[in-house]
Each structure stands twice: as structure tokens, then as C-alpha cells.
Length: 586
Image 1 (tube, rainbow, N blue to C red):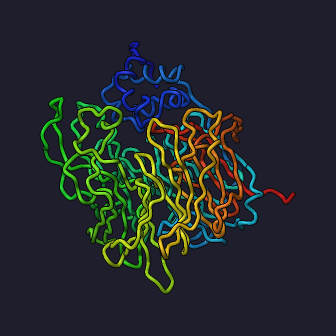
Image 2: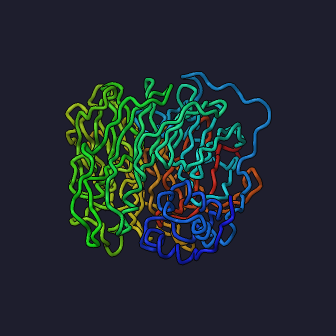
Image 3: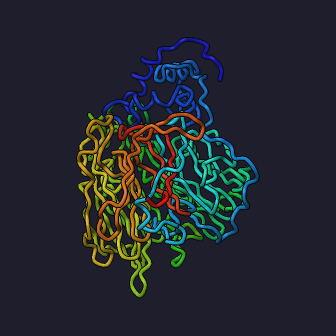
């Protein structure tokens, strides 16, 4: 990294250009969380990572100055490698259909997040004996939002610093690493001996799962703010990729012409990366819609990002996508909706909007500024995937959970007709059902994150819902005293996705606890507090924090969980990946 040619005022630049999102009322990481990253990681984020668009108008000297101001160190500081290399020869990669697996966002195409007994290797009666087996510390991180995937004796994990790892799940050592050069937020998808993932610049990658060699790389959207947040879903030689965006955050700048991004689902050939079809969630491109109070051009409609992993319904030949809100008017009927898309052609077969007229962007935070649309909505995205429930001898159900706090059951055979709905929380901009729920054939297990930006009071809970009736089966509130004496950002909200297995439910919380619950009663079976220091396999000391956007992965008798969430002004920063397995009986 070259030294800056001149000295710039890092503090002034941060206050003038960054504080609107990184300040107390913003939804991006606060300064204390950014400081933990180190200057090298901050510089990387500004130049090639999540904040590349915001850094595009800065000089090289200004980028260095901001990074060094926040971190209090030179931007050339290099952190030690977080993962030691494995010795010896790697085991053979499992053939298709062999080996216990959690191959993507969910173990199945239906996105139930339910792990079957044989693949889990963890009877409910053994959960109380779980203990820490190993940990990895990532020095240049404050948010660990990527979920682990597993196939047999292989574990795959990506980071927001742009590195993908193939690990030994038993020991945590690295068999190979791949540096994408751009931050990665998605879970990795494993299929046909390949590893698939997306990055912050809307690129999709395919790597050889055994060697880490790049097979292909494909850009699925050219919008400057497009990114891939949800894990791609692979089926029958095609990869279905959801496309989301940070444009709603960029809109906080009053001189930004808001907004032009349209969400989409893209089908790629898994062998070549060639695009087969691309379906926008908003049919037509944005048009001019007058000017904002500062005289800057307004455009729309925009938004309807797809934040979550697509759900494949092979029986009906459909892929379901859950969409977010509109960023700018006019309102589009496919925002805050479930879309049913033909797997082969990409044609939208039907859509069901469940919160009409939700116009929102980051200019609406705090005191609304120029780009905040009139008639501002509540920002009730669908951040979690739709879930197909196969009912033996009965009607299949399509479940959808929204930030409004509502759980919906739709009929996939009648164009998404509403079967029942149930309110489980009050909802909010970062409230309600946030990143995902789990389901078996009888019940849905739903976490609630009722917390607003800038407020650390919340009502977090985990509920079981009877699928046949839509009635509450049990509800377990999060303990209300777990944040006493903890850092700012601690909350009892449960935003993380839920993981289910026979007899038990796992879910992490913003209070820094990973808990397991009895599936029939909601009683706590096991509770591990991650807010502590950990010495990683590389000898570096790190610390756990809030658990938010990544759920627990259960496979081969292990439970894998990332810990740390310093994004969007919520949560306690952290930088660890933890592996648990039952200890010897006592």
C-alpha cells in the first residue's frame, strides 16, 4: 500500500462525509466498532469493499487519512493470518449425495433451516454437553455476518474482508484460502464439487471445492451500489442468485440522485457462469420524478432488493424470492412481496405484496433530509427467505416472515393466497422477523428482533407456531437482565436466523448468547455466553460479541457459530468463529 502523498484531515472528512450514516442516528457501524477493524481493513473497505462507492470521490490521501483517524494507526499495518494451514494431504472431497451436509443457507432447497438427525449427529439429549472445541480470530473484523457451510470433512467460510476458507471442521486449520479482493457477505453454497458465493460488487464466483482454484467469475449487475447478500441456491445445473443493494443508504446524501437500483434474481449456468436469465423485481427502469428540495434529480421506482437466499420449489418448477421496500416513488406492487418465478424461463408467475406502499431510504433516519420520500413507509422488508413446507397428505404451505413482526402462510397452488397470518412482534426498521426462521413439518420457530435504530430497548423472543392452525404453540422471551454491565449495543433482540433439528432449536442473540431450546416446550437446554476473550488457533486473542445475521450450522456432531456484529449501529462488535461439540460425560 503506497504512502499518502499529502496529509489530509481524517477527522474532518469523517465528520463531513461519513457521520450521517456512522453517527448515533445512522444504520452503519459506529466509530467505536470501526476502530477495532484496524486501518488496513478500513482502507480496504473504502477502496475495494463495502464502502467503495462512498470512497470513489476521495483522493488517495483522504482515504488513508480517514482510515488512520479511525484506527489510530498507519494504514499499512498488517494483521497476522487468522487461520493456520493444515499439514498432510487433504481427504477426498465427498461424492454428490455422500457425507453429512449443510450445503448453503439451509440444508435443503426449501430453506427450512431444519437439519435431519443423521446429518446433525447431535441428539437433543447431548446438547447440554456442548463445549468449545476451537476458535478462530479475525483481527481486522468487527462484524462476523457469514454463515458456515459443511460437507463431510470439509467446512467453508467467507469473510467480509474478501477471503474464502476451506477448513478442517474438526480442528479449524485451513486446507486452502482464496482471496476475492472484494468483501463477501454471503454464505457459501456447495454443489457438484464447486463452491459458489457472491461479493459486495455483485460478482459471483465458482471455485473448485477441493483446491480453491477459480473456475469462473460472473458479474450479475452493473449498478454501482449492487451487491449480493443472500447465498446463491443451486439446482439442476443452475445457480439462482439474489441481488440486493446499498443504494438506500447512499440516498442519505442530499446531493445523490435517488434512486435507480432494481432488485433481481439471476440464473447462471453452474458449469460456465453464463447468464441464462435475469428477472428484475421492478419491471421498468427508473424514470425522472421531479427534483428534491435541494434541486437534485429524483428518479423511481427503485428498490425491491432481494436480500435473502432464493427458495427452490422443484415440484412446481418455481423459485421464490422475497423482496424489500421501495427506495423512491412511485410504489411498485412487487416491493415487500413474495415473487414466484419460473425456474426455466425467469417469468414472474405471480406475486403477493404483503405491505403496500413502503417507501423508505436512509434519508428518513432521524430528521428526514432531502431524499426522504413523501408518505414514508415503515421499512418492512422481507429480509428472510420464503420457506416451503411439505405436508404429507395435506396442502403445502409457503411461509414468509416480515420485519413487521408478521408471519404469513400462503398457498403456493393459488397464486400466494393468504391462508393465515400471525403477529409475533411489533416490528420495526430492524425489528420483527429479520434474518430468518426455521421449520419442521409441524411448527415454525420464529425469532423476533423488536429494536429500533438508536434505541437499545427491545423485546426479543423465540416462538413456536402450529402450521396447521397458525396459532402460537409456545413463546420464550429473552432474559431481560443479560445486558446489565455490557457494552453499548447489547440488546435482548433476536435478529439472527433460527436453526432447527429434531427436538431442539438453536439461535443467537444480540445479547451475545448462543442458546439451544427444547422444540416442544421452549425451555432452555444450553446457553453459551460468547462475550469473552478467545485465543484463536493462530495465538491471537479476539472477542465474541452480538450474534446477528449468521445462524448456527449443525453437522457431524458440531455446532459452528460466528460471533460479533458491529454494523448498522446495533450490536456488540466481535471477531470470532467458534466450534462446539459434546464433551465427555461427567
